[in-house]
Structures are given as C-alpha cells and as structure tokens.
Image (cartoon, rainbow, N blue to C red; front, side, top):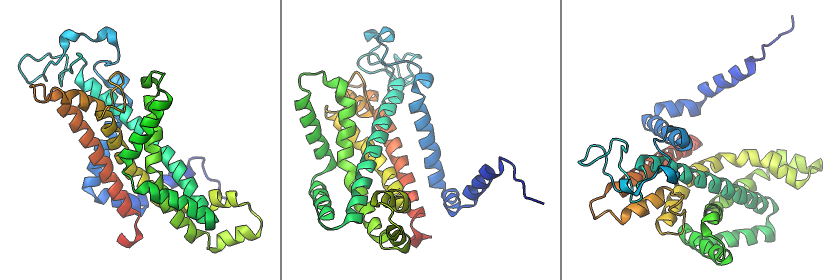
Length: 314
C-alpha cells in the first residue's frame, strides 16, 4: 500500500528535527543563554509593541505638559502615579520614552546590520570567487577602512551627509543617514569572513562540477557557495547588532544621531546627562540601564551562537 502522509507531517518533522538538533540542546544546557534569550525577547516585544504597551505616547504633543517636567519615579517624594519612572525635562513619560527609544535603536540596528551584511557578503563573494586584481582591490579598501574606528567613519559619513543636505531639515534624513553610516562602518567583517570561506568552497568538487556544465558564475556564488558560508555570517550579524546599537547610541549622545523629537536610547541619555548632577538622575540612568540590558543580552546570545556553531568546541 502506498504511503500517504498527512499535510502536517512535514512541518512536524521539521519541528522534531529542530528539537533534536545539537544547537537546540546546546541552547537548553546554557542557563545564561536561556535567560538572555528571554530578556531579549521581552525587550524586543515591548520595543516593537510600544504604541500598544507604552502608558503614554511621548511623540503626541497634545498629551505632554511642561508642568509635568522632571517628575521623579513613583517611589520618591513628589512623584506622580501616572509616571512610573518619572518624566524628562519636557514632561514626557520616561518609561514610554524608553519603549519608543528602544524601538528606534533596534530598527536602526537591524536595518544597518542587514545593509552591512548585503554589502559585505557581496564584496566577499566577488573577492573570494574572482580572485586576482578584483580581490586585491576589495581587500585593500577593507584594510584601509579597518584602520579607522567605526564611530569615526560614521561621524565622517554623517558630516558629508550634513554638507550635502545642509539646506534641508536634517531631522528628516537623520534615520537614513544613521543606517548608511553604520552599514558602511561594519561591512568589512562580513567581507573578510565570506571571502575566506568562498576561497575554500570554490575549490570543492561541487563548484568545479557546476563550472564544467556551464552554470554562470553569479548563480554558482548565490545558489551554491552562499548557503555554505552563512554560518559565520549569522554570528557576525548577531554581534554586530549589539555594536550597531551602541554606535547609534554614541552618535545620538554626541548630537549627530537621532534628534530629540525622535529620541533613541542614546538621545534620551544625552538629554538626561544635562540633569545628572542637578538631582534628576533618573532621566539618564533608566535609559542607560535599558541600553545596557539590551546590548548585554544580545552579546550573550551572540557569544553562545559563536561557540555553538564552532565544531572545535562540540
């Protein structure tokens, strides 16, 4: 009798394979990683669901009163029960500001990591597969960029963009300038990693066979080599997400990132820094704690993923 499988058999099989995989068991064995994953998930949810879970909308000017400025947290004297963590200098609810600011920081981080990965993977594939002069040119550009810290490159790109769009309101382009600046700062790590893996893969038999039967080089790189070099890329992307968030926050703290009207975590810390020694410590401390929690837990997940995908440590 023919074997008739139900439509749900394949998804169940995939779920079973995931549960039985070494990666999943490695995840469950590490209590630190499990806690980091739970905290990261909670932070991601409150950030991306900010319009629904935040007590107030810090961008709605109709609901903000300057009379509520610098209200302390609820456990302190002269607090207002409407504002759990207090308010900033403009009367905006700090807890809501953290939710919305984390959302902006994460969106900038995700977009810049994706853009950097696209640039770096493309450059690494071309350099590793083509070799010769193309490889030398791409790698020399990468070597030159590695001599400068990422934040300096981001500042340079931001300055160039400010000169180009000098006659236009910068706040309109701040979000996109940050993404471009961060993407052009972090592409080198992807390019160097993918290049090394591509140089190994292109000499294997399946690539040689694809060349013999006349498959175009672009298809060979995308369909055959790329899936086999994505493991290290995922690790770099996870770690770079934390780096991108920190760099974005640093730029915003320096005043060249997100504007006060669209505050990220770095902008909130910069605003609170002006009141840190005047008694209103909560304006800077609570966004700083949120940033530290987010970056720490993303880094912990990145470290676990790096070790879990390393065959030498299994």
